[in-house]
Amino acid sequence: MKTAPPSVEALIDLMARLPGLGPRSARRAVLHLIRKRALQLQPLADAMADVAATARECLNCGNIATSDLCPICENEERADGTICVVEDVADLWAMERTGGFKGRYHVLGGTLSALDAVGPEDLRLPQLADRVTSEEVREVILALNATVDGQTTAHYIAEMLEGRVSVTSLAQGVPIGGELDYLDDGTISAALRARKAL
Amino acid sequence: MKTAPPSVEALIDLMARLPGLGPRSARRAVLHLIRKRALQLQPLADAMADVAATARECLNCGNIATSDLCPICENEERADGTICVVEDVADLWAMERTGGFKGRYHVLGGTLSALDAVGPEDLRLPQLADRVTSEEVREVILALNATVDGQTTAHYIAEMLEGRVSVTSLAQGVPIGGELDYLDDGTISAALRARKAL
Image (cartoon, rainbow over the protein chains, first blue to last red):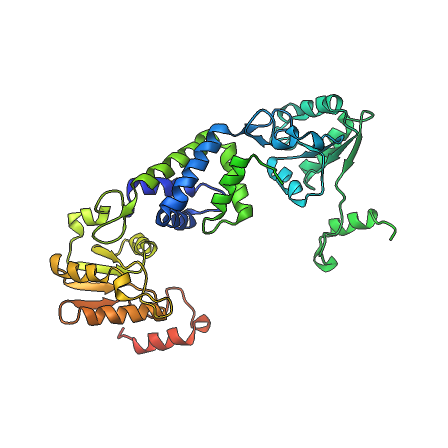
């Protein structure tokens, strides 16, 4: 059934592969773009071509960059002796949104996983060990997901860096605004173990 | 806060303006695209540039086309003497997905609306009157939304074409799979009035 011209159908197919868009919402988005083709479609095409040509991994931390180093690694003010280790770039952006961390990052590119056969050599772990020495790091903060694989990776890193640098991890506990009644048992137990004096 | 390079932030801003994507899902989509920049980002940029350069309105019906006529108006087999009138291209595509209509379409580009100051001259109504004559149309099927504005427009078209052509409208009633208990009163009343012999 050829409803739209082939080039439009091709665009819809490509858009439908984006996470968060299905075939129907891709159609709606493409229709919207075609209505505003001068104001939105052409600028979007240009922006995509630009990013496709220039985006790559920061050689130092693995963040997305358009030159050898990402904006964070280029900024000397962020060399404060701490490195925050995250699984992927999305986690780095989530940390950065809070505005609470002033140091640099290290993107692992995943977690150790026996099931998926991901070993230390598949992640950016050797680079992390190098950076601890070369950047005179005092503290490595592990901001890994609270999953089995995330915690396995955290323990591996703690052992790898033992005696060389202080290794800390994000606190686990009751989320802000969280109600005990709706929390899982594991979180409540962890919060109880990590209780602190008021 | 410069987390990502400026060109990536610019792309995220443009993506976030798409219907169905917010700032956060735009970020996720862009990250996904950058990870697959050779396989997805570049083809998507090319497809968008292609559509931006070629897409326009079909001169006959208002559907999206890449030449003067859309695929449906170019197809002589679809000149079966019926025209289905819809509000916008999304409705045309919804009709076309059903595969149940074999004639041609006419896209109004909106509905009459006193509130938004949309009069007959702002829609493709004169073109519809012309087509009824030039394409030897037997029946005009109104597939307008069952809203106040949609129904006002339907009545206007019925009056405009009175005596020249048979004007019909989509049936109103209980949707397939609908449960009476969950239907609004207006739909049940309409279904009762339009009851038919089994």
